[in-house]
Length: 396
Image (cartoon, rainbow, N blue to C red; front, side, top):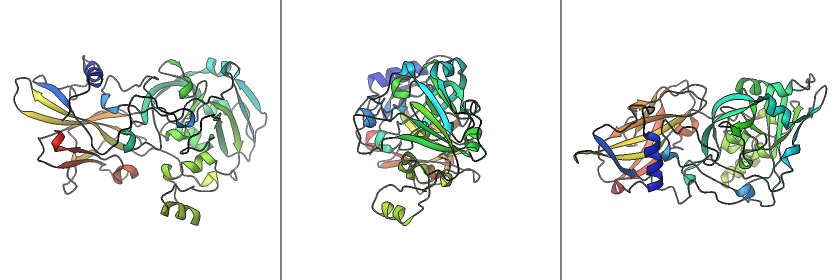
């Protein structure tokens, strides 16, 4: 077991103080936090630190600091997958071009959209490439403001052939990244825009977007992976069912649960590379986030009087169209799953907290696995062990 780093411990304790915290998540009055047990096998990726530039710019959130009072993430801490393009044109003259299969193409000034902006609710974004290597820190939640995308589309009137919407953002960088394909754009069905209540964001947590988060205009598609949340949006085109999938869509095909569709995809997968997915946008599945859950910290708790030691896993649940209601856990792959002790409320748009206590473990390594025991709910990443994390009793 390692002591909680001072900055992390201070942030955690400050956020945990006060009556607003859920009683079940607060340490018992007879307990004190001794430290956090580290997760093992996750690499040295720095948290809450900006690395790289341009397409390769990254910033991962330290999920271990989350409490009921800190579930909204400030722009300074909100994860970054791609930095603001250094070739971005002046934003004071920004306009949105809406064209394609429309009756009357328009260019909408950013000032007009800012005037129309209204609260859009709290929504979580998770990078489709979120991973154990980054301690799963490429996810965050914020309170957004903006304009419903359907309202913007109503300005132009669509032709009968128009069945899909191509949303594109400025993505030209001097600094390239070998792991990324330049160009950010995604094609959605009109029904997907309506059902998801997609919107063009102008603010997060009550303040204007910042450059790395898409200022002046970012698409947010509630419940979809962050690769669809196009930043620096400058163009929307209505297209038909024959529209080809964009390079951006094909880059993320394997990470948004698209099935291999060609011999080339099969070859790419066998060689350890990502499949490119369907050729046409209409054949892409919705890039929605399944219900999921993740342990974010393991607390070592001591009796205030210096007696027995106990341990508690605290985690988050998110994804899907409704709150996770039946979350189960195990620390032994040969054991049956059992319900977590406490599961917070919330809805599928953002994350909620859960906790589970366990006794001091015997020597060995323990794999914390979670499951949603509901046959009507699809949990592809969770079922594959994608969000499982490990601890070593030598660190306890």
